[in-house]
Image (cartoon, rainbow, N blue to C red; front, side, top):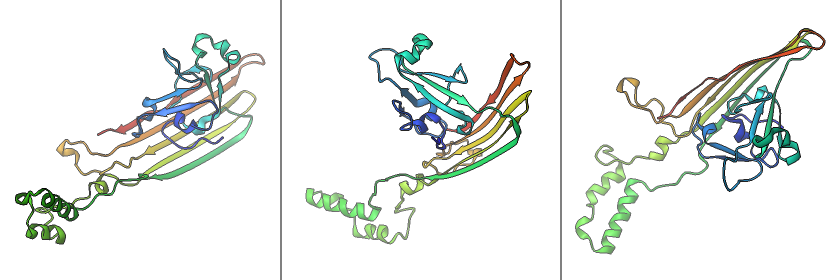
Length: 262
């Protein structure tokens, strides 16, 4: 199946692979992978429940791999299938295979994805004028006549003629804004009888709905309430046929990440 764009592949696999349960505790851009836990055979009463993850036969995390680099993902959860992995396979095994080169001329693939995310539901609050009117009514019901706000003051809140003295500010609208995610990938594959290659370059940019932009310039040495994450991916898989019986596989990969956490 096609893996959707996202900061972590684990979260994209939820509901796509049978028997896999993914729990994400932190949705902050750039921090998803650190808070994600996966279970294949359910939770044990003691010990670690994390499955064994193998990427091209090497035990490592696959959180920051570009989905465009992946050829296949499979899950081993039966005892007979995981027996070869010993104790490490007791919680199941996730096998990730990345794409490799093929015989033939150069093939180029480019993909671009853009998505927008917004809050599903935000609470609606009364404005300042409505709040004061309701508060005065509560004071009258409780007999607190001395706490009632004068009508002249209430009129300023209604007319909004002096916002600094009689503020009416929508904090939900100030902090929460639509966020844009972008994902770009360019890969090339090909080769001959001696060497086959697969090269991939990827870029992922994630924003967050909790965002006030660059409200505070850096010269004030204050953190902005602006979450974002950018990830760069590079992979080069080489298959070199030295002789008819000798084959060498070389992989060069990297995925540096830059993020802002207020």
